Image 1 (cartoon, rainbow, N blue to C red):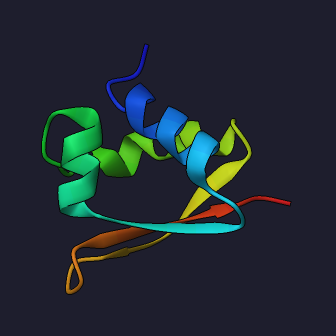
Image 2 (image 1 turned 90 degrees about the horizontal axis):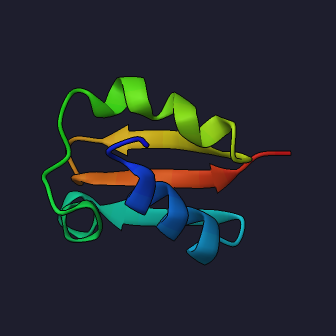
Length: 68
């Protein structure tokens, strides 16, 4: 199981067409701060019908979208 599984589950259950979560919200969901490894793990979300559209370091947020 992926360390980001709680986040993927949250995105799938919460996201309509688009969802923006702050780094702080992601930390609350996963139990740890987002880190560089997120770039590798984000590919797992594509297999579930969603994608990471944008990671904003300035706004400290991640934008998720439904694929297709």
